[in-house]
Length: 431
Image 1 (spheres, rainbow, N blue to C red):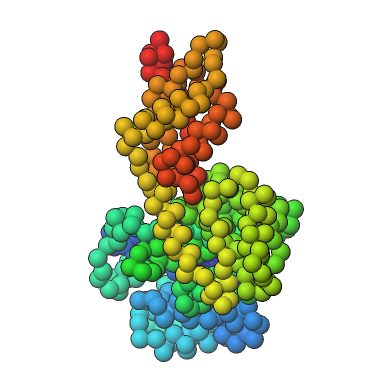
Image 2 (cartoon, rainbow, N blue to C red):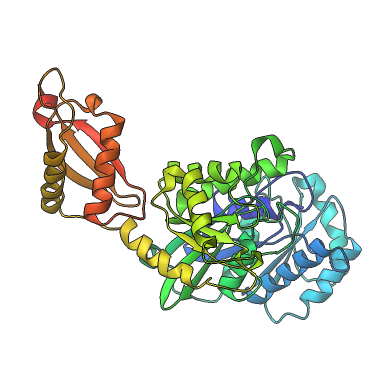
């Protein structure tokens, strides 16, 4: 029908999945937009089937209802080439019960020759029909002029408020309980929970507060093995899931307690590490296991043995269904975020590093010491340290690992990824 195409046009970025397949959008999809200097949020919903009894379509219908109830106004988009349908008439009846502005738009009116396709929609008893083309932009300006005129006045969102929020991505294989965890945290069914793998297809952003702290929670599409990605739609979902890591501070990597660590879990963990995102390993479905005093230790050892490159990542055991220990995730998030955004003064950093080097100097280079002259922290998220040395290429991987471990232990970065960059010292670079 073109809802996601219109959403992308208004948001100015490809956030929603657009594909020639009915039902590509299942959950509500939020983004910020701006029209004529007026900022607002737009929500792309799944297709609304008024009378379907299929479970997934009933859940999509409930999600759409919730989005309509939360909105200040509604754009009802209909398909001009398909014509007025009984479903359109049912939705129009429902919209009359909402005490908020509703704009009726007929899509796929790509040129003057298609204008007559919009006329039959006046049978709905509507005074104004907007004939538009989401793909080509025809008529969208007039529609949005009317929309922003009807929006309530609100103070524009500030970048400072967004900066204060901790952005959390929920990632993992399909059907490990990502949406269930989000719903438990938020206290209502924010995303569709369905045992069918791949139910969540778009990345879903939800701002919320917990213990007076501001967060943004992102639910991502389940990442499958490449060999199992057969549908084009799922390929788009994987791309969006990977992109999600670029705009998050912390990734909650969900693992199924019953199935244990799978090969795909390790691949996803590798993606998180490559992006430099802080990671918390969340073992879900903990309630279904028979446990004794050694159960947690056994699972921790298995995780550490398999994910050797994530030895620093905290591990939390929860049940998204019962809520067991779900709130404890936020204690770990707070501690992890504090390290992820921590800065060390240059003086303290150089004092500590020189002590580390004195205990274990770097290997000689051409029979001369490969001296580390100076160290500075260049950035956070992740904490990144630049080492100025005589010959950067001569710093072996094993020595880099030594410095990484000592910085973790000695400077309080034990639970987050850190990056070390080695550069030619200034004097040699000038030569």
